[in-house]
Every structure is written in structure tokens, then in C-alpha cells.
Image 1 (tube, rainbow, N blue to C red):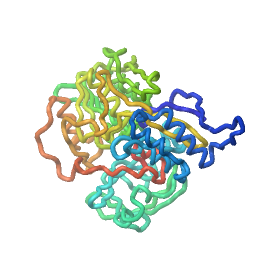
Image 2: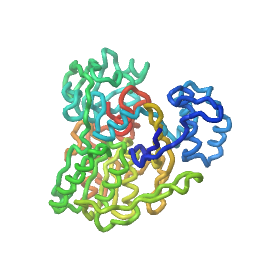
Image 3: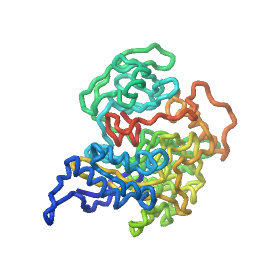
Image 4: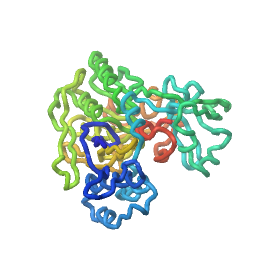
Length: 449
């Protein structure tokens, strides 16, 4: 069994051995790690050793009263052991398939249709937020702003009254085919079919240089901190440096996090050469593991730029590594947020593998150089703006983009009213159920199906 260190919802790093497999000795029967008993033992051992909230008396009481046989499997046991799951460990500690985790964080691949969606919870309206290039969803006519009216002949109302939309897209297997009734904005509905395949996410689908207010402004859409993003980020900043960019808009409205190595690189690119060696972030473990406390500094990066200001476009889906980068930069650079308050995940994880599963266990909190962290309610925005699903991401008239451009040029928020047809950010975004069929990492970090 292996141990792997994660950032937030993030990456596979520093591997080390760990115990808890139940190997026999002294006459004690060996517990096979892949039995239900063995898996529950793996979870319990890891929690009692590493869990960030172990210093809390109420968490200690859970261990004292624990009877593992009361729980059917490791998932059910973990549900019980999470600390204040409605407020703090909001499904951050979870068990996921190793193969799918590594498939997503390595080449940025998952089995699915290749789209993300927004569920308006009052009207039960499902709208596509993004369809990935060269995906089955794109080929079937899925696009930003298109509404899903029916799945396999069932309305969204019927689905929500039964299993819920997150579980309506079939098993995570290549070849699964479903029928959809779609309605593009201002057009008649049409029926289409899509078949699941291996989808590759483009982590940086666009970057460009904008001339506005006599300034050279870089714009970057960043979807996920997967390993393939590293070269794309370096390339984008090379273009920014060549153009003489001094201010940047970073669009992370659907970026749920990813690998710590990519987060460190991105933060360093944005911090610039002038901040190399300065403290970016600090990690704080529980008292039993405080010897592992440490810090990360901004590193020298090819194409890094000293920027006058950075504006991030965020939504409730901007999480984890995204929030870490923003929090790390705020003491050093003029940083502003446009859109909606972020999700709120200021903690990191340790990965423990057993059988073909990985336990991502919250083990540390993350703070910046000023000890600022604890943003479980999310990072607040400076300029509220709507995620206008009627226009492409990066369109000059899209509300979040136009608001960000005004903020980065003038240093102030625009006064103009919201455009018609915009999806108000005050409507709570519906996150997918934790165990909906599909790649767990793809759903968690890119909201991808």
C-alpha cells in the first residue's frame, strides 16, 4: 500500500510506504486488505494517524465510540468519520478508483461524453456550460448555453424526483449510449445520441493578448491543474511576455483544482521574477504530525512576468488549487476577483492506496505568508458578475469577461446593469453527487461528464 501527498483536491506526489494492511504476527489472523474488513481497517488506521481534525474533541469521541462492523463498507465508514461534513470536510475526504485518478491527473483523460452543466435547482433546468473539443458531446450538438430537456425520454423533473441529474448519465464505460433532447437558445429542440469514449480535456483552451486603455492585457482560460497544463501555461506566458503584457485576466470559472506541482508553477508564473524565493504558501498538519509542517516558495519560471495587476474570473466552481494560487498571490500582487465567491477549500490531502482504491484524506490546512487561510465559505469577489451562458467564454460582451476587463484597466467595477439572458451567480450552482457514475476526479475538478 502506498501513501501519496495531495494538494486540496490535488496531486499525486511524494510516495512513501505505510502500514495498516493487517499482516499477521504473533498468532493474529491476517486481514486481507481487499476484504470489506480490510478496507475499513485501512480507512480507520489512516484517519486516526493523519486526519487534520484529530485535535478536535468531537473527532476523538468518534474514534472512541467506533464499531466498524456497524458500517457496510469503507465508504459508509468514511461518511461517519468526516468532521462536520456540512461545514468543513464537505466530502473532501473520499475514496476513489486509483486508475481513474491517475488517468485524469496525468494525461487529463476520462471516460464520458465531454461536457459540463449547470442545474438551476428551482426550475430544474439543465444548461450546458462547456463542451470539450473533439468530444462525443461536441459531435452530438452539445454546446455552451444549450439546454438538456430529456435524457432517454425522461424529463429533468422526472430525473430529479428519482435518482438526480448527476446519476442520469449512465455508467462510466466506453460505449455507453444515451438519447438526449436538446434545445439551443432561440431554436427548436432536437433529438441526438451520444456514446461515451475516452475524452481528453484541454486544460488551457485559449489565451490571447488584448489592447485596451493603452495597455497590453493577457487573457487566459484555465480549466484544470492537470499535468498537461504545464507546457500550455509556459507557452501562454511566452506569448504574454513577447507582447509586453503588464496585466492579466485569468478565467478559472470552472477550475476545481488539480496537481500541486502545476499550482506551484502557475503561482510562480503570475508572481513574477521579482518575487522568486518569497513564501507562497504554508502547510499546517495536526499536532501529532506537526513535524511535517512546511512552506513553498515562488520559483523561477521561464516566461514569468512581473505584473501590475491580476484579475481572476471565478464562480462557485473555482476551488482548491485555484483558491490556493489566488491566496498565495494576494500579499504580493494587486489581485481582484470578478464573478462569484469561490467554493471554499483551504485544506489539503494525503493519499493512501488500498487494493484498487485511493483514500484522499484531509491532512493539512493551507495558509499564505500572512497566515491567511480558513476560507471554507470561499474567497469573496471584488466585482460581482454573471456567468452569461448565452455567450462564449472569453467573448468581449460576456458579463464576467467585460467586468474583468473594466476592472483590470480602470481598477474599478463597472456601473452598467447586467445583460439580459445572463445566469445570475446568486443562483446556487448544483454540484454533482459524490458517487454519481463517472470519473470522480473529472467531476470534482472539471465538473465533467
